[in-house]
Image 1 (cartoon, helix red, strand yellow):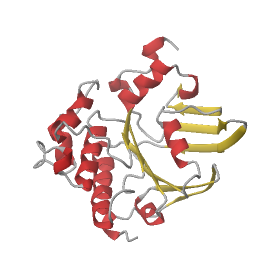
Image 2: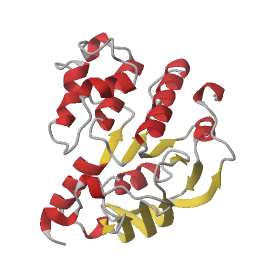
Image 3: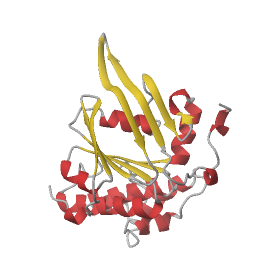
Image 4: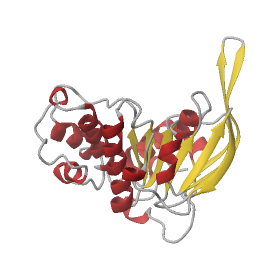
Length: 251
């Protein structure tokens, strides 16, 4: 793999048709804590497709975050194969994984990780400075419904508004993949629904393959497919006959 040219330019990366974005084959992840081995993932096989909305559902400690981190290039498997298009993430160098994360993946976490001294607009614009073909920061914030809050600091925003800034920041680079780890976990029920509506809108409008981790089974209704994870393995995958809107969800 020839250095940082390992990934194709942005314009060449989008695939048409039903080709999988990710192929995950036989993936394991083992952590060592002293003399103890912790098996976080056990032989995971999974494919993810362009533009679909996938929910990873399972209890705390089941391996959801480990799998998401591997998909996002934040971690590497102990064994197995993880292909993004036709590129092997397990064989990638640190520099290649950094470029992969910067150019292809948007992350949304449970906690917002905003810089307190920067406004919503400035927090979002940080990503546009390192992306190849970024969205305008104001456009990104309009997409998440914060066009009236551009110049507010995080301390002046509610939790739900801060999470929407985090989503705007993630999508400003126009990622092919949007990975969300418990994005409503720190929010109350009405605010969580607003954030889910934003994620659904972003998935539909920018076409990013969207993966959302949750332990809340109600959220699974808005997915194309639901991947149930238990004890580090995929227990079941099912496809919803229709995607529920966030307003139809109750938990």
